[in-house]
Structure formats: C-alpha cells, structure tokens
Image (tube, rainbow, N blue to C red; front, side):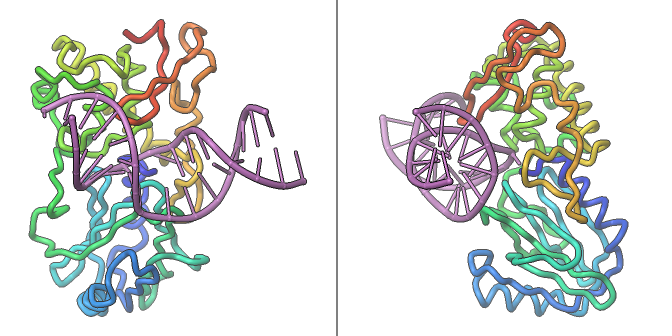
Length: 266
DNA sequence: CGGGCCCCCTGGTGGC
DNA sequence: TGCCACCAGGGGGCCC
C-alpha cells in the first residue's frame, strides 16, 4: 500500500511525536513476523532505549535507537503504524510516557527486523537512490538507457529508484505524456528529464496531501490521506481524461494495472 | 536481462 | 440476498 509519500507522512508524524520516546517493550503478536527467539532478542535490545531518529529510504522506515540499533519496517500492501490502542496488531511497541505504537496489517505482508544503525540499510536489499532525496535526473536518465522493459516496470523497480509504486508511477507517466507500456530505452533525453521532474512533483504532492488512501493507508492517527482526490489516472479506468475527455484505459504492465489516456499519452 | 507466472495473505466489491 | 471470481499502494522467486 504505502509508497514514498505515505511512508514519509508516517515518518514525519513519528518525528513530531515520538522523538526521544523511551521504549518499555516490544511485543511480537504474530509469529510470522519473527521467531520467538528473534522477538526476544529485539525486545532485549530495544527495551530501555530511546528512539532518537526516524529515517526513510524508499518505502522502508528506520527507527533509530539510542544504542546504535535500527528497527526497520516495510509496510508492504496493508501495513499501518497506529498510535494508541489497536484491535489486534501484529506487533506493539510500548513506551514509558508515550502511547503505544502498533503495526496493524490485514494481509500480513509487512516485515520488520533489527540491525546495527551504522550498517547500510535496509540490509540485504539492493535499493537504488531514494526517489525524492537522493536521485538525480542524470543517473535516472542513464539508468533508463538501453532498457527494453516498459517504463512503468522500470519505475516500479526499486533498484533504479527507491520509493515509487503503482500509484505515483501512473500519475507521473500521465503528467509526462508517456504510456506505461512504452519501452524505457526509447525515451529521448528530454522525455527522461521531464519524467523525472514529474515523478518528483507527484511524490511531493502526495506528501503535501498526506498520502493516497484507496482503502488501507492511514496515518498514525488512523486518518486517511487526500491525495487520491487529485489523481488523474490512478483508479480512474473508464472515466474521462481530465485533459481531453477521452476514456481512460487500463493495461497490465509488469503484472500490475496501469491506467492511461490513449490520447494524451504516447 | 526480460517477461510471465506463482507465491506470500485477507477482505471488499461487482457481477450474476 | 448469496456466492464467487477478481482485485488490491509490494516484492521475491522460479522458469523459459
């Protein structure tokens, strides 16, 4: 579910409200999240420490602890980090003087682990530069060169750019006037530059609207984002293009649905 | 390297 | 109303 803007919204909420929070315990309530031994080890290393920083790389969230450890979370499709009491979370962090933080996750795809803070993170994940804070148009343009894969698939590849998912890729492609199935390597240099800036604009706007909520995404307080209200193509197949009124079409690219305007996007 | 599958899970929705 | 196939903000693995 959450892409870069959604994870960033959560991160900012944590910075505001949990910086310095004193961890009392970590409870793993869903065995699939980690073995008993892992859960025990995580708790032992985190209890009594403080949360000193909240970092994001792509769609990964890192909670940095005062003992040089980093608790890494990836929410996948339906993961939510919620403050206060929550029905049946998969994991719960309790604090001395802050409300609980829970990981709720209907589909149970989310993953967590603990790793040394100074180590490269997320460990064992080949991740490209963060799409908003690390990527450069030059490297992006170079990365697309010669690629035969569809541009939408390339944007979803976290090794090229970290943080872009199915929503923001579709939006950026619409704004850049490019069809999702277009071969990545066929883009002219100017088109690659345009796409990069539209991508960053789409992500930035997503953050400004506190993320996109189709169904599951929620912020720390359980509130939905509002970015979906301005999306031009995402989840709008069969409806009129906001530019030209043509009927928007859906295609499957890289196993994912992408909506585009057959007239505005080439 | 690329594409097309399948898998991990659960639940909402739309069609019949 | 009831049932069911299909679909979903992600990503990894496998085979060809």
